[in-house]
Length: 264
Length: 330
Image 1 (spheres, rainbow over the protein chains, first blue to last red):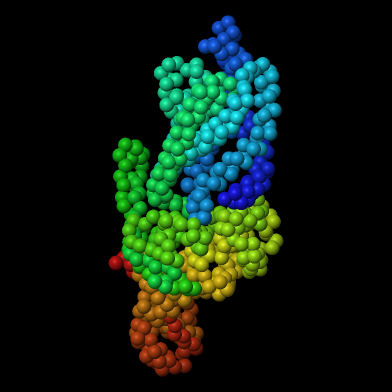
Image 2 (image 1 turned 45 degrees about the horizontal axis):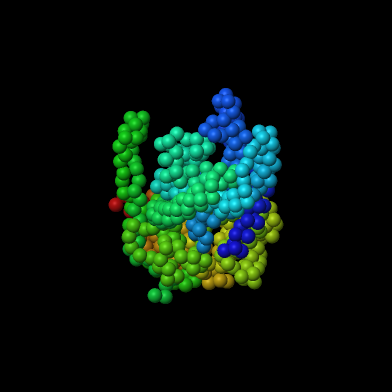
């Protein structure tokens, strides 16, 4: 499998290197939302005498810089493409090769994130300096952040595929994907850090998987949690990884039985 | 079971929504949708031996492509059984997928933005083709399909015909033992069609691959297939020699008569059904058994007025057309 991934990565690199403009736009996409919210919260903090719920403007800057990084590395757009692949019959040749179609998406995902990271990291460093971001990151934060980020990316990826698999039944899934993205937007910690969410919403956020995709790795990286808290959250990530993986297995098996190979 | 492909009572039902035309019906369909079960394949059985090239014929919507999709593993059938190379296709075991291919018209197996040679390397890795076997297969495909000038251009910059050739190569790189070809020459010009045909025949001869192909071009079928399977409305109508199809399905022969200028053709109706008259050339359909006797009588009776006479089977297109139209009206 390692050799297969190496070959697929080389092909994907060749492909991705031809679309520099598109990569630049993806980069902007990763940056715009966090910066808008950072600007808004900075203004609110200033109006409230310097802080909101214990978050100073510098804390918000630290949070949103980390969040932009997490958002970038956990994003998954495969559901949008899956609809197209099903409707155009492009999934069929992939289904008939001795390699699960999911692997192509994994490779594509890794490649785009790798390429765009080169622009993202300096851009985020610039934002961090401009907004005087504060990080309370210790060595263990970085050590836990890496596996936490990988878990988050995997959960997001599997959930994206679960939503995408609806295309086996309906062919069109964009509405479902958009709904999924909006719910994730609310509960993942993008509008506000999870700690600042009003009581009931915060409780819901810690039950749903979305916070474990964005909020948790973000807080682990910026030093916004104790070690015990971080480990507990990562336990939640492992739980959601297992649930999303098992869910995908089940729904995929049912979906391919349903697949009518339209347009192919 | 020595057959490479063995199909027993294969059935596939599609659950499709339907509605009347017009705005009112559209609004009603939003609230309450009507579904209908459409049998695409209604219980067909056949088996194919190693190395055979079999033509799978039928009009649009007959169930040909659905059958190919089920046999390649894309579709789960509603009922019946099938084994290809001993595997149940729709389980899509890797061991099975490595030994078969489904080539569908102009569907893309290749990555658009990179040259075909790079896509081939990806396929080599996915199918785990050993280097020496890969080189051998590639060299053969390059030679047969004249691919050398195309290999290093991005696939998106190739013309339709060029892309089809490269797609063919991509689908056959792993030297599949079974190939399902769905309209392999669709959309190609006449010389490219002939080239693909020659290629399929040559590939079959060299590798002994078993091939089941559908085509609307009878020339493909005549050039490649000794045996044909004819289906219509998901039901098998004929399975046997292409040569015997005419005698089985069309109970008549065609007699062509060319008359001297100014000769009267009206009396010819007594010898058979006049199908066409083009200046001095008259075409008659006569019952198969009576053909020799009618031809002899024509020669005898027309005497000096006859320039030329021919007796033959109807064109295969006409036989197929007759089968389908008869079935449609019965």
